[in-house]
Image 1 (cartoon, rainbow, N blue to C red):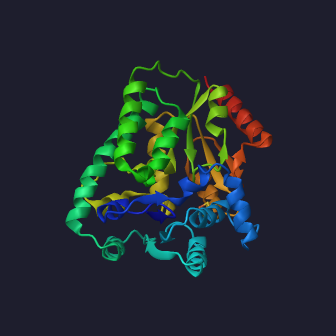
Image 2: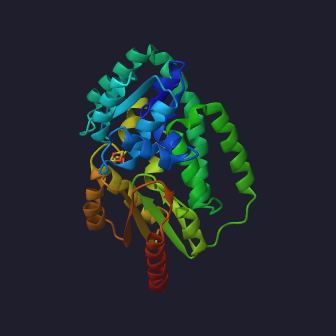
Length: 326
Ligand code: SF4
């Protein structure tokens, strides 16, 4: 079992005969994620460090993971120090860096280094990619069922896509569950909500978000970053696939992806989630400047239910979008 701190070319991990497990998912689905944050703080993590970093740290130690891959480029600079702290606690840390300028050759070097460290071959990686491509095609169908046929809720879309960073550690089981879910929802009556929303930014740390939106006559039909984790564009070449992944590179790729979604999915508005103490909050300036629909910016800090103030802001935003509709 190899922990990963963010999405990486997971085909390489599975091809090497290991299981990849996304530490973010492990943290947030733990029975008491807030206790993991407290544990990290007890071990010396300052209050003004993002809760995801603390959660990753604590869950790695609690689960006894001996080896992790840290994404030190294109994700979060906190991960560099986090890796060093975990290495000092005896965890083997393998760094992986997406090149900020999306340089193909540099990405190839990074992927080949990971391949060599994990002891696998390009032939095995290509075979694994073909296997995972079948699951990614299923995720693409799930996404279409969300925004075209309107049979999938925002939460269901989020749950499957966010889990595709590691396929729940077990691609076969993931695929079985996905197939059975798709069969079930194809028979479902379509949702008929008034407002269609897009969700931007890292996955929310609080719970009850999607449920509240749907109780207010709206639905999230585009989960930006989660959809990126799924790599639904069907690239034949693995390097092209990870170059098309918008999250680690400059904001232009994200803006193009979101703009396409606004038109294709007929979005009335966007909710930009930002994490307290995260540098990615700054992107809010560029998203607001460049996107043509209203944006509500939310901030989440620690795991737990959505607070009433944030709930009220969501309610007011949705009402405003309803009032704007002809
Ligand atoms: S939310 Fe921001 S600060 Fe926290 S781990 Fe992710 S990129 Fe880093």
